Length: 98
Ligand SMILES: [Zn+2]
View 1 (cartoon, rainbow, N blue to C red):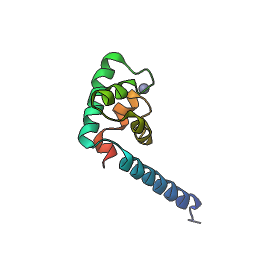
View 2: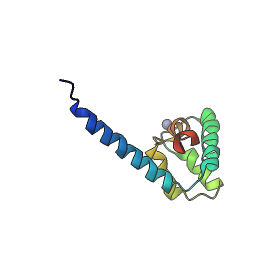
View 3: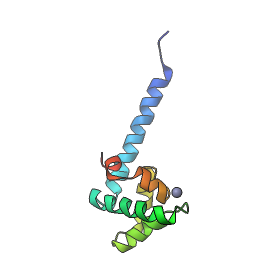
View 4: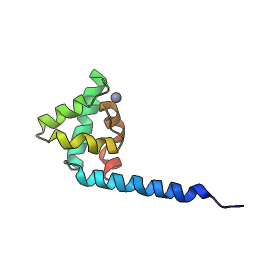
């Protein structure tokens, strides 16, 4: 038999994932250029200071750029950016605004 009972489930999960990313993108309080600036900052400072498993550097960037930090972390987490090194890896604008 060639039926794949998991296929429908996987499709559903993929669609749920896409929908969650769409919602996070819509809720993101910054645009692509700001996100590039954020990631650049986190990458360059992270190379020197390392990641302490928080989003400390991202928060510094937000404060410096007058961006409301309260709304940013949940959006970044939706794209896998749970801490500074993950933001550097997973949250560049090509990945978020694709
Ligand atoms: Zn990290």
